[in-house]
Length: 216
Image (cartoon, rainbow, N blue to C red):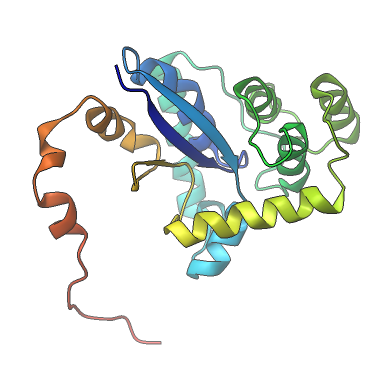
């Protein structure tokens, strides 16, 4: 059986990234796959593409958190919104990269620890005492504040943008991008050989079309 390789681009600030991380093993049960977890700065994607984050539009923020908590309840996933959100996730992102081997990506255990630090308990994700305890638990190979780690995060975000990643979570496999928690079943279909992906629809429906453009 051929092992499929996935890249999981994510920022732990996203509740959808947390839910996708928790659900991924269940949704892909029976599929032979491995994953590279790739931390990126969501704010960098928003700036590049000229978008606002969900938390920056108040009605969308309210809906987002109602929605993610409903999803969590449906799937039995423990979830509590952190005391402050949005928050600056640079500390968590850099910690993840500092835990990775040189030139590599963090393992699932480190990602799980960071995501659950944020999305379980309802506490302040950037509380200094909690972050210090998390850092001790994960024992990074290099200081998260090291210049090499800061550059690694910039490089990872740039690599995601070069692929066309515009949001988190995004899964990449064999050159195809699957965006969002609700793409998990579509991703699973591709990995299981759904014949839909052998047709032309993926390419034809992804092609640019002429249409009305919003004025400046």
